[in-house]
Length: 170
Image 1 (cartoon, rainbow, N blue to C red):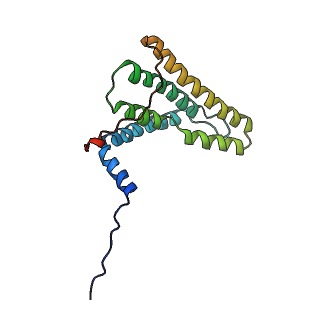
Image 2: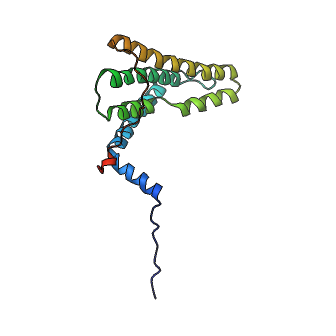
Image 3: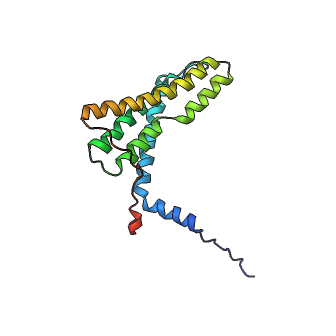
């Protein structure tokens, strides 16, 4: 009796490009993953040390989000305007550590829970307060770092990394 043959579908061009890009940027992917694990552990530690009561203001998430935004303001000025940074610094610290440390999803879920559980005033204060405080924190972090470092404000540039894979590198 003949064995049935299994046909493996060849990836379409877009899938092939994505798979190729992952292999090409493995070091960046690992930097983001490792940094994200560290940032997430730090945020979790804050929530364990400073839990909040149901219906109460989620201070630990608020503190993580606002301090993370302050840190990203400082970091971006330092690695873009002040020091030449290795190409993995931004993915590791900015996307990974600070991306894992700050948490939009927890902020959204806690806001929803406060609004649905009869703590609408606290929920609205948390929603608006976090957004405002986070924006001010980024602005202050960047502005104070520029002032201390003695650098002016640069024209906006693209934050995307140039692809080293275009030259056939992996």
